[in-house]
Every structure is written in C-alpha cells, then in structure tokens.
Length: 300
Image (cartoon, rainbow, N blue to C red):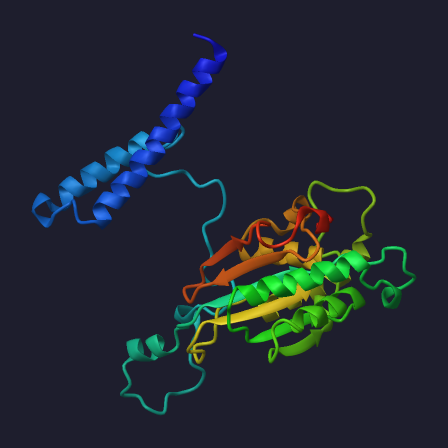
C-alpha cells in the first residue's frame, strides 16, 4: 500500500470517528434515545461512540484522559462565591445560608474585547513621537467599523495611556458613540514575565520585576467574573499592547504565563475573552474575513 493511500486511510478513520460522535450527539438532542431504552443503553452507546473516536493514548479502563497539567482553578479570580465568607455576625440569623450563597453568585457574563493598538512610528524618540502611521490610522478605522458592525451594546472603552493606544482608541470611539472613554496607566506596554523559551535580547530582571507587577495588577483589575450585582451581560473594550494582551490570555486560560511570547498579534486585532458566572473562561476569535484586508495587516 502506498504512503499516500495509507495516510488517506488513516485520516478517513479519524474523520469518520468525529462524524460518528457529532451524529450521536445530534441524534440524542432530537430525542432518538427514548426514555424506554433507559439510561444504561444510552450510556452504552455514548461510551462506544467515544471509544471509537478517542485516540489510542486514552485510558480504556476508566474512560478518562490523564491530565498533563493542573486542574482548572475555579477560584482563579478570588471571586468564587463558595469561598467567600461574610465578615462579622449576620443581622438576620434566620436567613437560609444556601439562599445567601445563591444571592452572592454572579449571574452575568463579561465579554472583554482586547484590541492591540494600530501600527505606529517605531523610529519616534519617546512615546509622544510614536504616533500612528497612515496605515495605522486606516487599521484603527477598520477596527472601529468592525466593532460597530457587531451590533453590541458596549459598556466602556478603556485604553492604555501610551500615545499609540490612545490614538487608536479615539479613532475607534468615533464608530461607537456614547461609550465612555477611560485611560489607565496599568495597561501600558512592558515585559510581564521572563519568557520561556528565553530570548537573549530581552529585558533585565529588574524590568520584569517592575513591569510584571503592574501588568499583573491590570489583569486582576480587568479580568474577572461579573459582580453579583451585575444583572446583564457586559461588553467591555480594552485597547492596549501585544505583550499585555498575550499575558492576559495566558493568565485567563490558566496557561503557563511565561509562554506569552509564543503568540503573535496583528495591529488592530480583536481578542475576545468571555468570563462566565461560573468562572469558566473562553477565547473567541474574529476572523480576518470581513474584518481587515491582508494589505492592512502588520505582525509583531
């Protein structure tokens, strides 16, 4: 059997398993597994479908995948209601503790759209001269148009105080009128943590120590689940810098933060983090199609 035919055959088996898994899920959602069949029959079918789709490295005995890292920390933002304790004595001792805990649970989802500033003048002397280029201004216009086209009700637009981020935010704000514009020094560019694998041309330890504390403080201020008093889902825009965004993503997804430099971000790109009331975090991507033409893109 030829090499190419062998590869096609293997890929066909893998794809067939995925299709079978999706088909089984669809069948169950349409009620094809009736109650008369019982839970045991349903579980048997699920197991066999999953067993057919799973890689050979999975454990067939316990039907689980061995974790290669740490378990998800649901209290990563220190806002898990089950860990919060009321300080002092309760005025109303008759209140059901379970009711109090339920009232303290977040109910809204936070959507945080992290935007990297547009292309800027790299040869400028100091931050005040590192303003957007003509291409950078075009990128900011397109990003603003994209945000407006999403049709979302944005709650706030926060931006770094550096010139390139401030200019980008002001251009974007033209397309989402009425949204409050706020600046924040914590979001300024910097070196969050020494990257792994290391790079020889990077910053001394003193810079990591200072920048890292500030960027971590920014993460704790802006990336967390909603307050229990928040009733509706929120959409917040943060315009800042590539290093800051990459660090935020690693921390929010509980990936090793020292891996931040392994990612790249385009100027004017939108990185969408969703923080659920449960503390789960998801990363969404907005494709380039209909967003920014290839000739308008620059990379880190």
